Image (tube, rainbow, N blue to C red; front, side, top):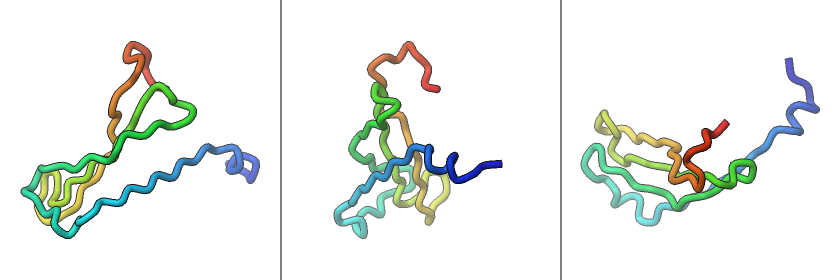
Length: 80
């Protein structure tokens, strides 16, 4: 069970990504668009990207999106 102290200690990140001319992005199914890479404070050696499939990853007429690890400065260490 959590309390207010637990909620206040959680880390948060807000990432805004504006895809210009998105209405023209209706590519074939499986074609992705990548956000710029960004880093999170506590995982400063790893960079992340949002990946959007405007016409679906595996199923057409749906928008698919994922969080992807873009790169890691020290790939030998696992992220925890």
